[in-house]
Image 1 (cartoon, rainbow, N blue to C red):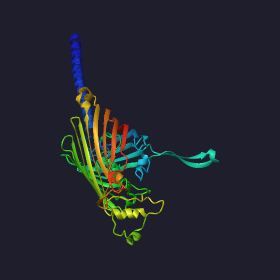
Image 2 (cartoon, one colour):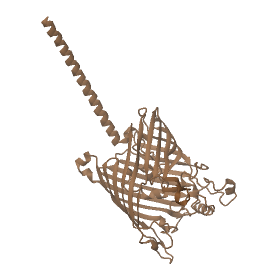
Image 3 (tube, rainbow, N blue to C red):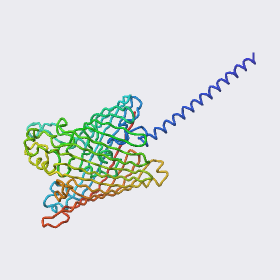
Image 4 (cartoon, helix red, strand yellow):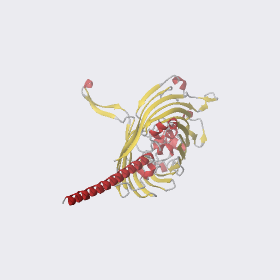
Amino acid sequence: MRRRTILFISLICCALTSFAEDSIKESAADLQALMERVERLEQKAEHPNKLGLDAVSGATKQVPKDTVKHHRRGTFTIGGYGEVTAKHCWFSNNYLRYGKNPEKYANDHYGEFDLPHVVLYLGYDFGKGWSVATEIEFEHGGTESAVEIEEEEGGEYESEIERGGEVALEQFWLQKAFNRYAILRAGMQVIPVGGLNAHHEPTEYFGVYRNAGDFTIIPSTWHEVALTFMGSTPNGWHYQAMFLPGLDSDRFGTKNWVKTGAGSPYEFKLANVFAGAARVDYTGVKGLRLSLSGYCGNSFRNTLSKSNAELDASAYKDVKGTVSIGAFDFQYKDHGIILRGSFTYGHLSDAALISQYNKTQMRRESVSKKQDVASDALAAGIEAGYDFFSLNRKLVEKKQQFYVFARYDYYDSMFKYDGQLTDKAAWCGRHRAAVGINYFPIKQIGVKAEFSYGILKKGTRTDGTRGKLYNDEPQIAVGIVYAGFYQL
């Protein structure tokens, strides 16, 4: 009996030992699988394109807005970006500073604290290739307005504006991804023409504020209700083609060329004329991105100011106001170096007639700026920075970065007037040089500081001689920026 008992206990011990070993092996296997999954997720966070994302949407690159692989059904993405900035300028902000007597404002200076952009992004993947995304932007702190009863004025109701700013639905689109080569998207979305529109998050450029060139002459961030076909190839090509309403020539102007012709001041977007936009990126070489983008569409009749019958019976019968924009931008990022550059050139047909037409809009409520608009505008810029923390292994392991950078821009919203080089509004053309630092204690947070110097273009003085007509524009600025996106 004792022998049987001992044998039975031995068999139980062997079984328990075998079970324990199997459990340990299974636990070890589960742990190993979990570690591998975490490692893959970290790699995806470091290299978001491995998620199958389209790197050229004109929207934030860290977000799976341009899904080309089917994500897990029910994936919810939340995120956004924003900036807190301050600057001091040793020049005037008076609207007459570029007038007949600019020397009057030579000793002026001013400062600003601001929230240029605060953006909230929400996205959801329904599965089977269907997804939706929305992006709400608060510019300059949004708006604070209310109707109040004024006790000091007999209890009258008055509308009070306590804080300026803008709130905009920057993006809202629905998307169907058939495969990585073919994606359809419809709704309000970013038009990725130029380097800035496609890469407008504050962690995508060195300056405290968005790069001045593209920001001055074309819409930024340019968003329209559009229909888009996009996709990418395994060897690094990404492409987009878009169909959208044209710009509105009524709102073109001297300082910003066609910038304010996007969107609409009405409760709807006029679509009397149409346009197309396209972008192609190549990312097949490690650390390098090369990009071409463009836009073309008429603009003159995209207005409510006059009927087609009135225009057909006038000198403006054949005016189309075709806006053509071509842009090249690039980025190299490796070995602690970031080098970025862009060049944008735009042409407006019938510019002189459009200028004449806009200046004849006499109604006070007209959206027209009643200004001359150039036939040609351009913007070019290049920036380079080096991460000095890349020289220290411990700081690299902590994923901290400290860039010292320099940037140069040249832009002119009145480069040509009706096809001819001109001194008309010479203050619109300028050189700008900047130096500064970017410190990233973590990937999503950046601390920025820069000193910049704007040198305005020379022109013809009243005595017929050529020289500097306007005061230079030095400025110092600091900012704290954020950009981050998370899947739940």
